[in-house]
Image (cartoon, rainbow, N blue to C red; front, side):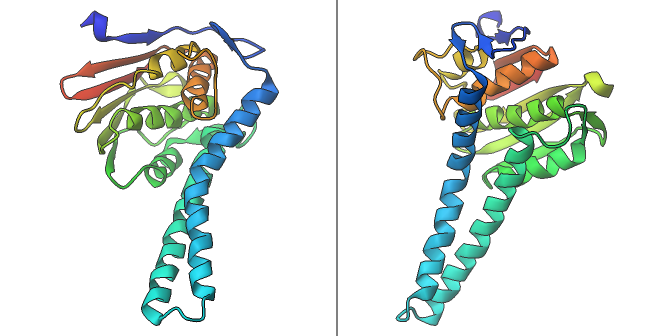
Length: 228
């Protein structure tokens, strides 16, 4: 139904101004750095905890093996998140760089929680960097609509440099978070942007920079995210 569909237009701004909210470059950079730190604090903290257990002389062999396994798993998680964030939020490559969608697939699957299964239907192709950055951020947006886990299906719309994306998020109690619409539009309900809100806000900026319209809509038991 049209009333269930949320759409976002496409305009740009040198001062990062969207609707009611304006962020200067320093604030935007600081909030994105905070978001990256948030993604890394859990696995890096687990690594530190595991090392502390290994240093304890009274730890038995079973406890040490558990600690070592925790360190290995957490290190892999931290590495995957860093690689994802480098492209999704960072300046990987030059402004005119193109990114392989096969690389984006690996980054997305490595970043997402194990309770989310990803079916990647995009072709092996090179796309402009900002379009791939938008894709990765849309994967995060789609995952937020299925907080209990489920499945994401990522498919193309069109082809070539102007390729768009359709992501179907299916899972138990799939829903569009209440604050998400306003953040993608640049109009947060609270009237301010913090580290927790910066990712969808930044996604809206990327869409506008790419001249892409975003649509979020329920479809049965799923949520469909469309970028075209």
